Image 1 (cartoon, rainbow, N blue to C red):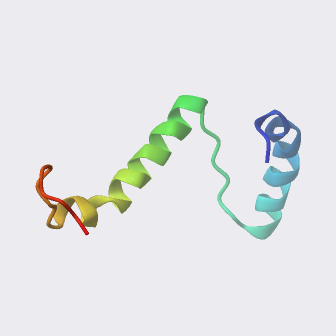
Image 2 (cartoon, one colour):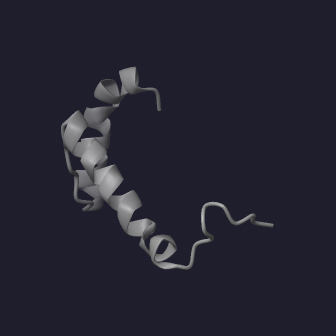
Length: 60
């Protein structure tokens, strides 16, 4: 959804979450970015811990 419409959708989403028993979390722009980056960092952990080719070693 385009960012300008998020504020318009917020009451409907909040109401739906309440009716469905789903936890609704509000966060500032920076806090939401921090959450996304933390999630991506966590998801990339197995890749970072795996074997990597040396920078000057051709791959493929």
